[in-house]
Length: 433
Image (cartoon, rainbow, N blue to C red; front, side):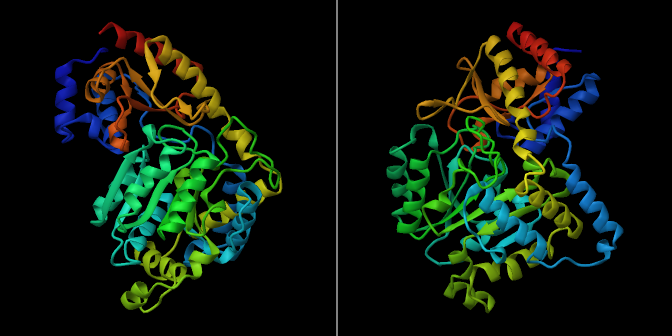
């Protein structure tokens, strides 16, 4: 059945209400891939969705089962989080990021998606003059949709041309207007896998302090810059972070990729001690309480979900403690993604593809969970439709806020020898069209 006809691709996209596949969301692409699999009877190579390719941490599973057996399912969770989870998380942040955050400021959320959604909303209400969220792109495409859903103004820029010292001038051009409430980015980056340097993080931190902007730092892929060993708790090198350069920050940590615990939707919003206690008159006027942290917990999260899965909090608490105690090497577990990245990248390059975001200043990017690939000078729409014809799904870089031509490649579902062999065959077919 491969290659699939252009007419079939067009019909499936039309039925999914997708006018331009390069602008489709991750989940829309999943639906398209599933429908084409049904029509053709062929399994696709799925590069579009970041599903963990490693089994969930058994320590978490055991702790969650015990919590359920102990009857926790009938008890509402504390919205601010289990005390043991908050304490273990504070230790974990110190062990792997070398930052001190009091347990009070570490709050469980229903995945980092809920954390960013509510943080973006709260930040937009702190100061009537600051109504815009700034995104350093490329970035997780769903992050970019959140302000649209919330009706909040946003600005984006592609960091491709603004690395190192050029970043300060670019940030200043936005922040100096006085309307930026928060800045959001991921590090390591989804989708490009670039890692911001210490110089760049210092620039972001200094600009955030100067213009009183809150930095929302998504660390979904904590310690996955495999060019250095970040696996030993309480020993350098540590995960890089803007927290060393400003007090205006929230770090988002997710169990989804760190512990392959995506199905339970549990994450952490780690709010700096100073920001947690900071009083905002606009919040007090609106909600009757003024501090950032109390409002995040008792207004935003309360209205959103009334807390995070009780049993999943026990799972995360156990996994964090095991990592801190050296009983579970989560970095060693996820290092397999680097191997899958290197192998798949070699296959793509053999078939004429090239890395799009290829450098961190003067270093080649690390192999990891994602990378970006372009094909000659082909635009994103044509590239994605041609890949679909050959049984490969991906997302376009323009859907991530990038101005570059190419796709995001997620390697987490390339786990078997046969997966790489199929990828090789499908790309050979792609070249022949």
